[in-house]
Image (cartoon, rainbow, N blue to C red; front, side, top):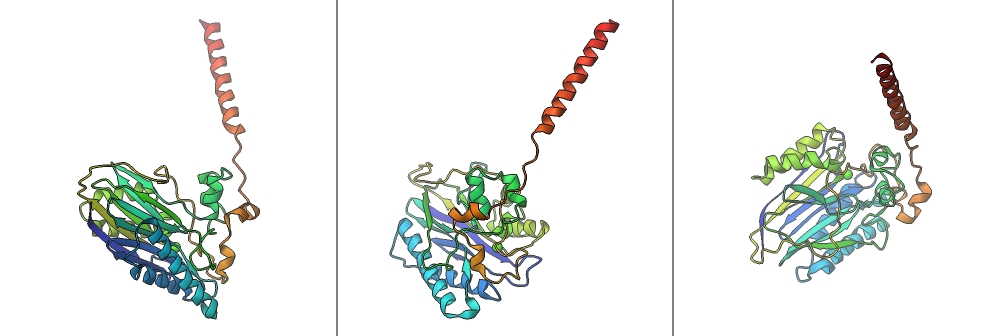
Length: 319
Ligand code: CA
């Protein structure tokens, strides 16, 4: 198995003054960090995370290595946030992929995403660590309700906001031709999975063009946040095995995006830690919007039946 083509691109978007995203394209390691915090702390946090990725111990392997790498980033961001008042409460998402012999290992914290494009389909590999995503997973919110939920900007896990961080890790056994995408929510909040997939298919032969196309699509969709896109492709496998191994999350493609940037419309809210709530507390702060009445479709169906019945009776009468 070899790493084929790859690319990375970040864009400030149309509404923000600064770009708080960072990415790393350092084969065999790829990653995205989306920082948050007052003033310039978001940039600082994602920058520290990117540095931790670039300086990752090259000797480790597997899920332990990506987990260690994110733990190291957590230490650096948290230490800085604890000693620098201007950086207090800062944090960042991190989604990292390491291509190893025969597999791609992921580490993930926050609401950036990793996707796999395979066999004409796009599949989200990571779970969003956001309040609305937790509520959708627990069945308390529909994906549609999540889109407009007032607390959709709340994330439940971040790198650097606490002394310890819980890291999701998993591995994918790649098939030749697999394309992986890692991106920040500035893409997925503006562009749905189907549109992302179509843009990629159109530029499949050139991943730099594909990255540009996604940035253009996100800006066309509003460009409300920083947009970051990292692609890498896996080619030539001697084993020819295409199975997906381990606890690779099964996520249906083309779900609508549920969350918004951690700071979207909340730039004035300084203490970032108030926006990171543990999942178990999610219920306490949740206030799901009212469900649309299910009675309306039933009433409509009954009305149609009555009209049909009346028509039949009339026809029988006049036959
Ligand atoms: Ca963001």
